[in-house]
Each structure stands twice: as C-alpha cells, then as structure tokens.
Length: 107
Image (cartoon, helix red, strand yellow):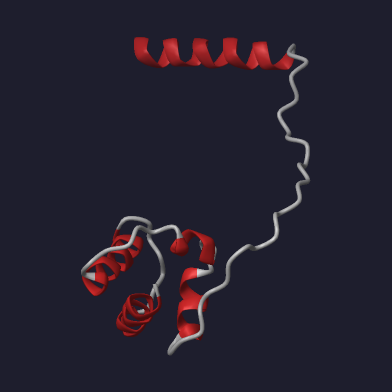
C-alpha cells in the first residue's frame, strides 16, 4: 500500500512538472543530404544476392574498408555469421554461402 502511494505521488509530481513546462514533447523534422556513394560492389557471381542482403544495411565502402587477410573465406564466413547473429541481419540460410564465396573471391 505504501509503495503504491509513493508511486502515485511521484507520478502526480512528474505530471505537474510537465503540465507547467514549456518544453515541447515533439521533435522537429531534420533534413540532411546523403553523400554520394564512392564505391560500388565489384562484378562477380551472385552480385545481386550480395547487393540484396548487404546493401540493405551498409554501402560497398564499408566492405572495402575490411583489412586484407590470408584466410579470406574463413574471415568472410565469420563476418556474415556475425551480421546474422549479432546484428540480426535477415539473411536467408541459402544465401550465406553465396555471399561468403562472392566476398572471398572479390575482396
């Protein structure tokens, strides 16, 4: 009972502060210009699969900035897996191998 009373009192104080506050609770729209793309996905097998999955979240510039590595296929497999498991990329399981092979062959 005491906890409920404290919660109601805090809610009343908070609402009272908002009612007398000149602060707007809505945000104004922001306009900005997106920069031109400076890189493009390289031609290769399954390019459309890569564009359809990878370009939904980031540009070819991002892929191009990845460091050179010895075991390209292992690296790209780990990256694609990370995109799916950590970042929630909605990549179809059937496309994973195609993406990995494309990236290992072209980057």
